[in-house]
Structures are given as structure tokens and as C-alpha cells.
Length: 429
Image (cartoon, rainbow, N blue to C red; front, side, top):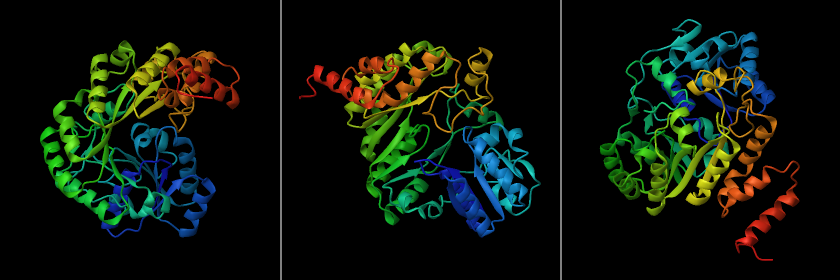
């Protein structure tokens, strides 16, 4: 079987788990990143695969669906999985032999061993995360660049307890009655981290959980064992509500280097009513302050171009970041995914008239909401300079000037940056 994923700096852990499960049953697995359609096609035909599996996210679905259809018509059995297949399975049925809805690790072997019929495939039973094999890294480390990357990715839990309106997590919970976050044993996590430490050049582990360390007893055990047995710096992602002295102390003891938290919006009304994120302004500011006081690197995440927001709201969000001074201010442009509650809200209120086919495969390209052209252009420009301006004193003032310029060339940008920094004594001629 050939597994095809999209380009990402994060290791494709889902496909790596599938590969490990297939190999345990004696199947041969290859992996390829979808960068160049012709190279993918040539490799597939040359090696004579029995199955091709596509990991399809909404945004990348158009090109991968087209490729799957061509292989299916050529007589090669294709499998489409991941979020787009789960929430838009009807959209995939005519371009693949198998459409894998929900979690695939329990089903992938049944598919390749001809134990299930073609069409939509779903198992109502989620796997026991402590019975899952360790993700197969060799299939992606054939790419020397990935193998030599000093940052490796690990999951300690699967799922998210929250219901943010712009995310499919709420829909995922409807697939599985009684759904809850599944937490791996500390022992299994330590075993995987130890394997990485022993076999690869390792500078940092990035735990990709939506909410790392949400369970305090688990975190206490992890902190003790990780600091004794692994001793590799790590980065993790948390919720603002979870940032407290006890948890920060345990993370510090275990060797945590940095923490990501999502602000999303500085507008309290939008954040609470539209995004279903109930944290207060004070909670956000207190969390950022505590993270920095404890000596962690801070990475904030935010979304600009949200429905009912103005460009002034987005500039205010940048002002927050200028004052918080995170090490990285990661910034995306809102994508109104159909099927999410916020995506459907945008359709209902005339902010979006598409069907997901106009959504890019990146969160950073451009807005597709029906704002006026001026507002759209300002959102797109602001995304390009948000992280840079967040590192500059009063960078929001500079950004507001820059996004209003109709034709901005690099020389003028350099001049404006120099003048701005000079005014604060940070640049000397």
C-alpha cells in the first residue's frame, strides 16, 4: 500500500500509525508527500501497488480527489480518509473505492484484506490507545530532511474536550456516543520518547496534543519519569484555562521548553459568542504572564478575518501580541469550513456562499468571506506581517499604516521599518 499525505512541517502521525498497524499484519507500506502530481503518479505505476491511501483535509481535497479518481479508473484500489472523508463522505464516494469515516486504525487492515465491502467504511468503536503500535517513522524518514530534523512529534492523548465553533471536533463527537479524550499511559509515552532519543538526533519533542497535561495525576507521573529518563526539552500545546501554578511547576520540572496557547481573538464578544471560547481577557493575559514568568518560550495562536470582525479588531489583536511579546505570534486567516457551526453561521448570514472548494489548503493565503475588497486585501496583508510586527514595539501602529498602502514595494517597507525602529531608538544610522 502507498500512503499519500500533504506537505506539512508536522510529522504525519496518523498515517504513521496506519503504517505500523499494516506492517504488524505483514503488509508492505510506502509513503509519499503530495508535492508533484506527476512524480506521485510515476512512482505509483512503477511500483505496482495494490492500494493507495490518501489523507485528505478540506482545502487539499480537490487535487487529491482528482488523483484518486484517476488511479481508481486505472484499476488501482484507492482509500480516502481523514477529516474530509469523515465529514464529507458523500463527496468522496465517486472518487475512491473506500471512504474511511472516523478513526481508521481499526479498519485499515480489514480494507486491504478484503474483509469489508467497498464504499463508506466506519467502525463505531474507537481503539484503545494503549494497544496502538508505536508510529512507524521509517516510512517518512526515508526523506533525509525529515529524519535529520531535530524536532520529533509525539501524541500523548487523542481528542479534545472542547467545542470550538470553527472546528470539526463537535461533529466528531456525534460519530461516537460517549466520546471522551483518550490518554495514553505514561509508560507508553516514555517508551516512545526513549526510542526517539536512542535512535535519532533529537533536540526537542513537540507534543501535538490539543491539550497536553490536562490530567494532573498523569502529569505528575509524567513529570517525574520524563525528567529522570528522557531529559530532552519539549514543547506542548495547552488551553488558557489550564495555565496555573501547579501545572506550570510540573511542566518546568519535567523539562518543558515552550508552550503554545491560542488567543484566537482579542474581542471578548466574538471570542465567547461566535467561537465558543469562554475564557476572559484577564485569563488570557494572566496565562501569558505566568508562562513567561516561569521561563517558558511562549507561542500564541490567533485567527484574523473572523466573521463580524473589523480590521480594527485584527489590529487590536496585534496590539495585544505586541504587549504580550510572545516568542512567536502564529497567525492564520479564518476558513469557513462547511459543516462546522461557525461555517454554517457564515452561510446563513451571507458571509460565505461557497461549498469548501474555494478554500485553500493553507490557513495563510487569503480570506474567502464576503467582506468588501478593501477589507479582504487588508486581512491578507496583515497576515503576512503579523508575526514580524508582533516583535516590534508598537508594531500594530506600523502594521496599520502598511496594510493601507495600495502598492507596497520592498524598498518602501524597509524605509518604513527603519523609520519606525529609529523613533524608538532601536535603529541607528
